[in-house]
Image (cartoon, rainbow, N blue to C red; front, side, top):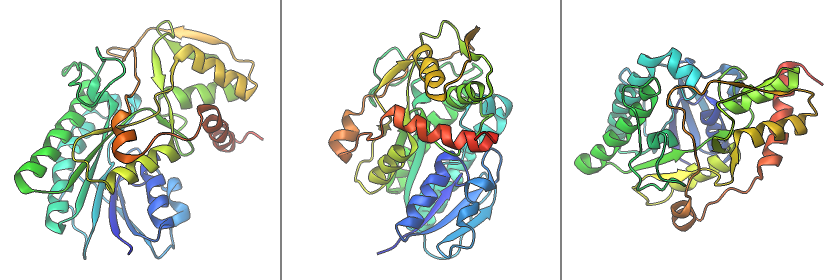
Length: 314
């Protein structure tokens, strides 16, 4: 039996892939986005599909959609440092007011609510790898606090609606995800390195390049989100790839895969930049039967093809 789902931030990188997944499964999708950081290009292929409806809207305002809605997936938010440093107030508002409005809408429709949270709730972690039980090490007044605390607040609000109103809720803590439809200029390490390598510029690593990240291909992430939505798991669940790599190793991989002649240069480490990032996915494995399937190298090859097209490189 098909469902009707509302996806906020549905024109964003991950949101648009979720729209694809639900439409492909025969569900009806209402995609809501104000294009603050999302793009019509990400969903243009769905226009005209009878299963897909797009609503241009700011979810910090009252949300109204006619008819039944079975699930709300709240993915609206700037999600890269360059965005939330440039849009600090909007980031805080969508994490607080936007989450409140989306939860209120889900309650009114008696719909299942899934919150897109983030590994950034762990801050610059003192636990490694990061388990869901870890409360984090976040600087609430630092420049990254606008995103970290917005997501921590949105988790608290989601759990309050679950406990006080009995709303069915899910929380996914998303670790570094990559794939087609990432913006070249979004400031995250992967698109930055890709663009630099493909255009022959130096790859700029911050600090000494020894900080670590763990990269999950978007198809795997989407599968994890869908499994969580359809599970009975109320507590937050990490979804990410535990295959940890240093930024230096990652830069070298991209240079090799692109066949670039680029070198690696270094810049000062940004304020509160996490030194390590690796998910403990024990809960996802045991509760959802989920783990990533796409090796990083394979995911990077697919993503390079997308960025080449975007840059007009054959």
